[in-house]
Image (cartoon, rainbow, N blue to C red; front, top):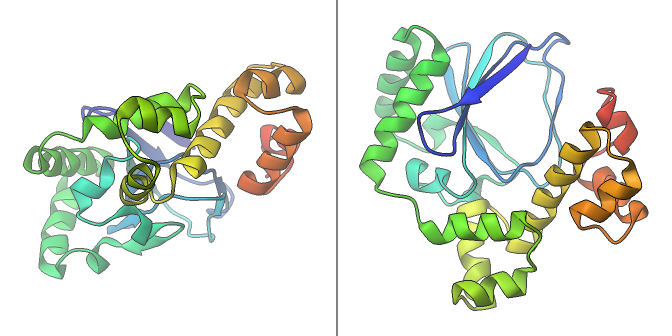
Length: 229
């Protein structure tokens, strides 16, 4: 069973999950990175460019999902180095530091609250997030073209691409495509007909929506909505 709630860390989401199918599942790309706890271990989920299929690791999971673009400053690793990867936190930080953090998380009333406290401590030491990155996400999530977004923020195309790689793990066009998929899924899950979903989310037509869903999610839209993917 999957449950999530808003974190005390701005823009982040705390979640827990106990898979009911031997851990098998489909995690869709969302522009975010997660700090994960599983059976006492700490891991990091990098930004995905396509659906990530869980590998059957049963047992309880907990995580904190950071707002797009904010995790690299907290973890000290450019997002593109973790693109489409799940890694042990000990691969990124000194082993002694990870052991101390894992001990604190494991000693917390529950792993999710322990992860949230850890994220809040990291954020306090990292300083405020770059406001430009949030503006990039906001603009692209409303369907603004990448070129117009760069112009409005006073950034050149190469500069925006470079900053996006470090913050989001991929260029702004990929981020815009992923955010558009999220908008479409939100509409379709509310029962909006697929053709109307495509138009309102910013696709050329329903066929364009269908292609994007298959490429990013790995299954047709109807199958994804039915939970069979």
